[in-house]
Structure formats: C-alpha cells, structure tokens
Length: 498
Image (cartoon, rainbow, N blue to C red; front, side, top):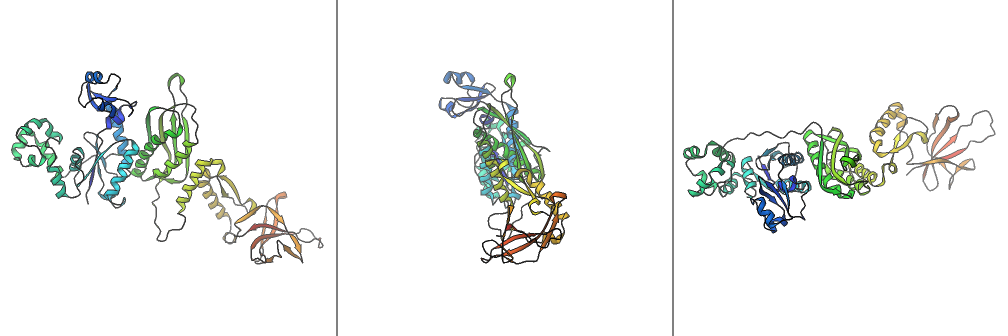
C-alpha cells in the first residue's frame, strides 16, 4: 500500500523565526514590510496578515516587530525532517513549509495509519510546532490536502472526491491565473480538470497539468530524500534567559527527537549523550555547563532519555542563565534489533532492568549505585569488586568474559551462595561438629581452594552444610599446616544460600 503523509506547518514563521517571540506579547513577523504572521494578542488587537508595518504600529504601538529569517526557516524545517526520520527514511521537503513522507512501509510497524498520525502529531508538539496533517495515496495529493486543510483520503476514489472540491487556485502553477480562472467560473480543481487540456496548457503552461496529473495518480513522481549527516549535533536557541534547570526539559526533548530520527536513519543506538548548557557570551562569557550521560544499555528511543534528563536537570543548580542548548551523540554503535519472546519473562527484559538502574543513577548519583565486576581470583572475597554502574556495563562484561576464560569449566559449575558474608564468622564445635543455631551436617563433598601469594595465601576446604531447619550454609575448614596433631581444625561460616 502506497500512502503519503503531508505536513503543513502554517505557523512556522511565528514559531521559529523570532527568537524573542512570546505568546504573552503582541508579536508580529514581517516580510517585505507586510505582516506574515502574528500572535494571538496581535490578531486580537487588529493586526492582519498582509497589513503594512505602519498600520500595525498605529493599532499596536507596543507590538514587537521581527523580520522573517529564511535561514532560520530552513533550519527549522530541517530539524523537523530529522525528527521525522524515525518513522520512515523517505522524507522530503516540499513547497511552502510542507514536508512529505512515504509511510506505506511503516504502517504495520507503528500500528496503522491512525496510530502513526497520533505519534507524528505528538512529536511535532514536542518540537514546538503546529501542523496541518493529511494522508493520500499520492504525494502531490497529500500536499494539496494539507494546504487546503481537507483531511485524509486513503483510497483513490476518496482522494479524487476531496481534490475536486479544493480551490482551483490552490496549486502553485495556478496562482498567477487566479483572476482569469475566477472570471470564467472555474472555482474548483474538479472544474479545472474538465477544461480542455490543449487550451489549458497553452494558457497556463505544462506545469499546471503536471501537478494535476501527479495529484490524481496519473503520473509518477520523483523526489530527493533528506539524507541524515554522518555525525549528530543539534543546537537550540532559547526564547529567553532560563534560570531554572528543570525549565530546560522541553528544549532538550526537542533535541532528543532530532537525535532519535538521526539514529533510526543510520540504524544506530547511542551509548552516551552530552548536553551543553550555553551561558552568556561576550565580556561575561562562561564555559557551557556539561551534562554527560553514559547509558548502561545503548538505546535509540527518546522516552527513556527524557526521563534521565528530567532527573539530572531536576537535581542541577544553574550558576548562570542559559541561553542555548547543544546536544551531541559522541558514542554510537550498531542498533541491536529487539526480539520478542513467545513467553516473556515476568518483571521485564534485561533492557527494562537496565533502564531502571539508569534512572536510579540519575536520581541518586553515579557513586551511590554500584555493580559487582568479576575478577579472575579463586578466593571468594576477592572474586569481584564494586564499581559505579555507568562504567561497569562494558567493563564488567569484558572482565567477566576474561575471568571465565581463565577459570576451568568445572569451577564455573560449582554452586555459590547468594549472600557472601563480608567477614567469615567463626563457628563453635559441639560433638566434633560445627554448630550454627543447630549442629551442621555436611551435604556435599569438599571443594579445596588454595590461592594467594606469601602472607595472603589461603588454604581452605569448602562444604555445603545443612542445619536442622533445612537451611543451607557455605562453610569452610582451615587446613592445618605442620605436624601438631593435637590442634583441632577451625570452621567458619562464609555464605548463606537462598
């Protein structure tokens, strides 16, 4: 199924071109001394699209006037297109602040066209834009429906019906001839198509017929798809100076959406992100505040990253005002596609568990969340060390693999207790048997461990012991050196089984 989504951003100039625009002020964007867009207060005060500068100042002397900036417009459209790459790799820029997406191959992945449209609208709201969205089987048809605010058409029959009702002057090649079309009574695209094609081509040129044929599915269309850059860096200039760190989350979310689209376009997952909080420039310039977030599990979804940034920004105290944000992705790797299990494990998969631990790190600090990193040592109390979780993920896995390679296979299969005591506890002896709440009975053959150098050497025989309450313990007996036969061996409790 071939399906296109057209996205028209009608308030793009007001949203993006003016960095100091505020919805609480009467703001106006001008192009060639005429009003291009206006805020709600400016419209309530009498400002209208097309009005001259002098008329706006006469009605609203305190209005904020800003000139349109085409460079910011292009950058804004590029940022939106980058974020939309997470839904399809086929995104292209069209005329008049419009984007076109070929989503036919993405419908099943995102649960159908309605669910996909909801996600696209949510992404654009997070980016800070208003959008007029439409769906059609042809790209030019989606463009016309979006510009004409004519809704969705999933089949060719409904598309032709909706296109026939649109104004005849809506296509770009028809606008220079709007007065002539109105004079002959041709008011809709349906009436325009019924005009003789040779005469229409001589009068209006071949471009108008080409647009109509493409919109109604009579000719094929070719596009230049947007290509994601090889590296990612996105910047956002804030509308005003921000004093509270938690107020930066909305801007950071818009940057994360762009990064998500870039990751999906390259089939990559990010393992570390860096958010730079830019401060004042000039004579009072300060170095940016750096938020470096290392992920235990590489990801390409923005939901988890937003939660991490919320925790980090919520506990951050700004030393100066923030005027801009810069997001970078310095560490990326190939995306590991998820595999769905027929019988999923209760409590979530490994990725869900790592995301929970990352949230704990963001909330409690990296020095307060530790993980055991295995070491190649036979002595139980030295077989691992505790390191911060953020740098334990990769190093712990590598150390565990090296430790497993150095230890024999029969050692790896031996049972170990879930709870190892920090310091072994000396056991009493009763009737020549170790005693811990009750006499202990040996339930396994001995496992001898001899390791260490010089004064740190250890020589022990480990047993799994069972008490009268059927609890299992990990105990060991010291091997006695020398020939003193009168000295009895000492027993110690070293671990508890679950």
